[in-house]
Image 1 (tube, rainbow, N blue to C red):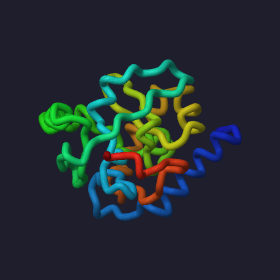
Image 2: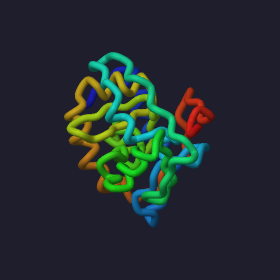
Image 3: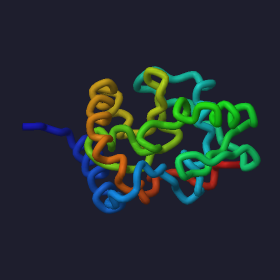
Length: 180
């Protein structure tokens, strides 16, 4: 029998609840998560994560770099914003190298079987891949076993990818910050 802490139970309920409420159409294949901004990753520059100094586990990551409306491109059915033309061009050459895994959904949420939004400020690059999470509480759980949660997410993603993208909003996240 699996025993979860109160925090893990809340995170699991959040992931499952959002996926049941918002992501039910198997007709769509791998749609990117979009929030009110209308941009992938809420309009933050996914190439710029590579230039940020990643924090140690347990420490808050540096904030994501806002994209600019004049440096955009379209990929995977979504509009992407970048802080410079150079970053936009790097993304255009190899979008899969920069786009967050799980179409911008929370990595922990996918690991527990749901599609919930990813917060661009709650990120980690693991083995060259960008992962997002939804809340600081979820990050705390995810960081306890990142390789294990990635392995679970990879197995479950095959069944989740074709479902509709989450329509939920990231809690306590201001969508007016990017793109600029």
